[in-house]
Length: 72
Image 1 (tube, one colour):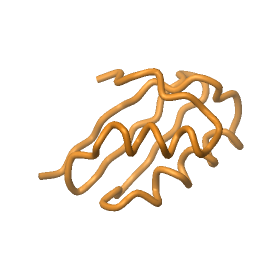
Image 2 (cartoon, rainbow, N blue to C red):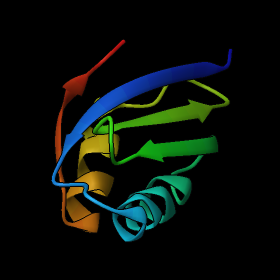
Image 3 (cartoon, one colour):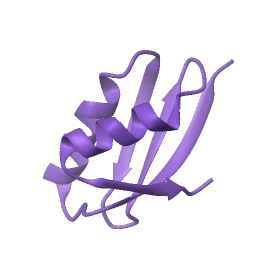
């Protein structure tokens, strides 16, 4: 069962930020697509199966940003 979830992330301000978050999230098992939007402060993650929010939070933290919550 595939899953697509949009998360709110604080601290993103540019393309470099988007790339850093995208790289960390893409490394998670099962992730098929990541679309970070620094202007909106969101990151949309598509995966083969639902992801654990704590795994997503840890990846965003590793990139140096803060996962605020789910947008959708």
